[in-house]
Length: 256
Image (cartoon, rainbow, N blue to C red; front, side, top):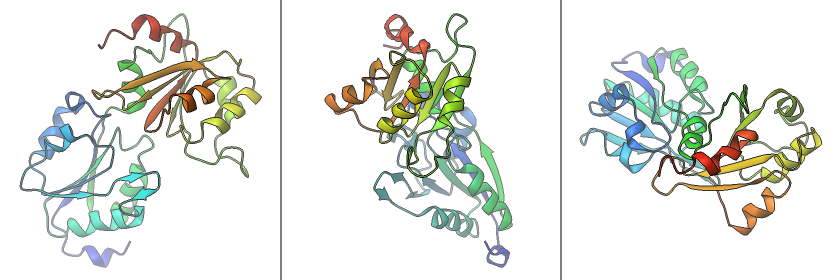
């Protein structure tokens, strides 16, 4: 980014986490910011209830990314944030979940700062925690799990050299939470089984977590791919793997 492009900067960019979808989970600070924003550049997974909080006079721009449908390339989104800060006091980058948890918030913040624009991060509740909670799956439990690993499934597992070390994750964590992993689930399951996880390890998929349309699909590691295909279960979904998933049958009615 070129600093000379920001010589007349008047505004500030806020990287705001919208949470997983339920408007009630938006932070008080985040809601107050949306109500006074001049420009809001938002992601595809931001729910209508959250967007309804936006200042009606604000400019709203959809920069959402979904598999196969990219509204704006990443570099153009960042450039747009910097551009909008030239003429607007409050520019909000509204991201589903939390900006710093698989949200590219760190990349955007670095580029914005290098361009000489002021920026602030406002965290949101990440879907890996919230979706599991709404499904009655505690990520930790004294009898089942004392460790959690959050990992992205959005890579070509099994092709070339995967960035995720599934062997270490399988051996080092009692609960595994996978973001953006539905499309790569067959490869992920293969890697985890090769790493030594039992074939009957419980696994749960939570689609549209915390929203009214939330769905859960519970199974075991060695048959979950077939179960997903049989039920036409698609993204967006969080995947939880580990003994804690067994508690879904006991606790899953708690948020009904």
